[in-house]
Length: 325
Image 1 (cartoon, rainbow, N blue to C red):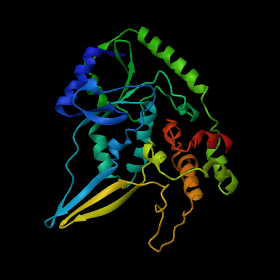
Image 2: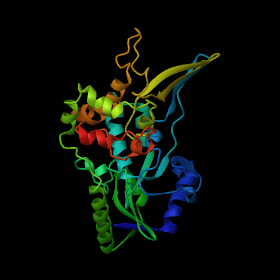
Image 3: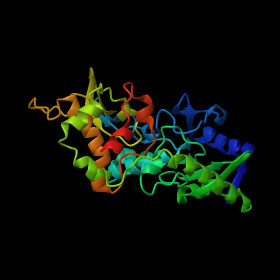
Image 4: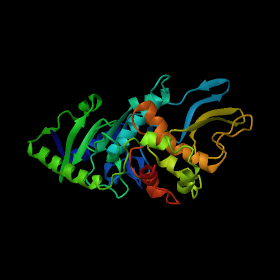
C-alpha cells in the first residue's frame, strides 16, 4: 500500500495546477482551481456531479466562419480531485453510452485527457443508498484512475489504474497496519449504509409490471413539476439536444443538456408528442433508470447518490418508488 503525507500531497496537486488543469470542489461544484488549498471536501457527494467535465452542459461541436469549419480546441490535461465512488461508477455508466459504437469522439477525447482521483467515503449522508444495488462497493475504484483513503495526516492509495500508476510512482510504501484501519472504517461505513438500503431484488421486472398501473404513477409523480433538476444533477443522465446558433455570418453547432422531463423533449416534427402528459414523462425517467437500462446493460442507471432526493423541490423520493414497486 502506498502513502503520501498531507504536505507531499499538496505539492503533488500543485504540479497539476501549474502545468495543466486541476479541478476540485468549490461551492459544491467541480471547478478549475489554481491552488489545491481552495478545494473543499465534505461527506457524501457534492451537489453537482463530475459528469459535466466529460459531458459539458453547453458544448461547442464545431464553428463555421468565413466559409471555414473550425473544430473545438483540444482539451487540456485535467486532474479531478476528489470524486466519490458512486460518481466514479457514474462515469462507467456514462461510458457505456458514449463509448459504444459509434464512439462519441468528444467524450472519448476528454476521458483520455482526464485523470479522476476518487476519495473513499467514511460517513454517508442520510440520502445515500449506493449499496442497495447488488455488487456496489464504496471502496472500489470504478471509473476513477486513483482511489485514495484519507488518513489523519495523509493519503493512502487503495487502487490505481494503468494511467494512474505513473502519477503515484515514488509514493512511500507503508506497513500492513494501515490496511487494518481501512478495513475497520469500511466495515463501519457498510454498517451505516446497510441501515439505509432499499429493496432492489427483481426491481426491473417489478417496475415493468407497474407500467400500466396509472394509480401507482399518479401517487408518486402527481406533484412533479418537471423542472428537470433531478436529471441535471444526476451523475448518469445524458440526454442532450443539438442546435445551430447563427449570429450574422458565424454559426456554432452546440450540444446542450436536455431532459426527458421537459414537455417538448419528445415533440416530433409532425406536431405529435408521444409523452405530452406529465405522468408519462415522469414514468419514463424511472422506467429508463430502473428497468429499461438494466435490461440492456445489466446494471441500473442509478448509483444511489441521493442528489435527486435532496434537491427535488417537491420531495419526490426515488427510494419510495423502488420500495413500493
